[in-house]
Length: 357
Image (cartoon, rainbow, N blue to C red; front, side, top):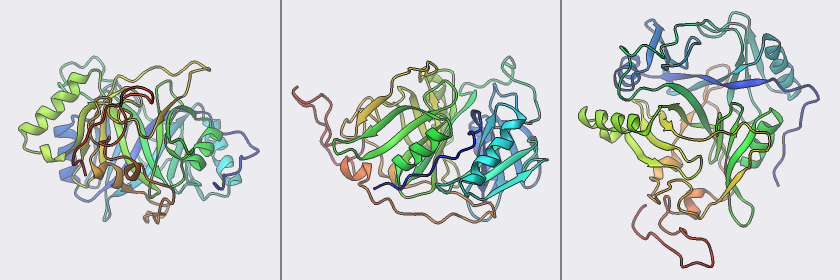
């Protein structure tokens, strides 16, 4: 039975949205080529060890920090809170949970002021901040706009062994559920959770963890994603396209998954839906519905289920990875999947058979 994380007596911090990720990379020049030259993220500032990048519509200092280091990993997933007082609230909340915390009034990275970092109960490095340096919002800089322009940071996706445990913890933290994947026995395989009024700011995927599955940036239209595929093909790096392009069932979004030089996974994402109403319904998908992960029923490559980035503790050391004990989504379905249903029970079943694994 899941050992749930207790709910603190103090209020949870009022989180606005996912804001940035700090990523450790082993070759800064190769990573710069990937994120700037290929994907077109905009450099706010850089030095010999760190590059600060932002998407087109962003006005805070950065959405992605690339930091040179010996081991490729995720150093932090950062959330912006509603006011300076909410940083205090975050610190008090995690201290009551018994989590390790670190507070820096001048921030941990350039462009961010007073912030608290925590090793959360699931083992993930989170940061909460309000103060930030404002930079030029490039929305109308059409002279800089490229055909595959990334316009917003959309979400994180975290891999954790116990999805119900993580779901309850994030709901206590103020996140709301938009969609999830379960089976008829009640096993939970994944959940999508939001603070801003989209499908998610972060998601929990069941697997060995804590690890970070991906960071996602949004485009305006699906043709922007197709352009990224065309560009990667022209550059002869199509082998770095892991999955897609395609249409998700969950979230309804058009997607593409690509791998950076360190195998950090990046999703390019567009066309999900509004979730801001207080009675926004939760959509639950059967794990055997082969349209949940890809609306067209295309297979999911095995690496998408098994591979993810290590995450660091507050000392910069990789967190130990704990095995998932419940059944895995890949084990009960083949890819997206070859042996699951397309039509509901009682109707003639449509199957996709094949050697997907």
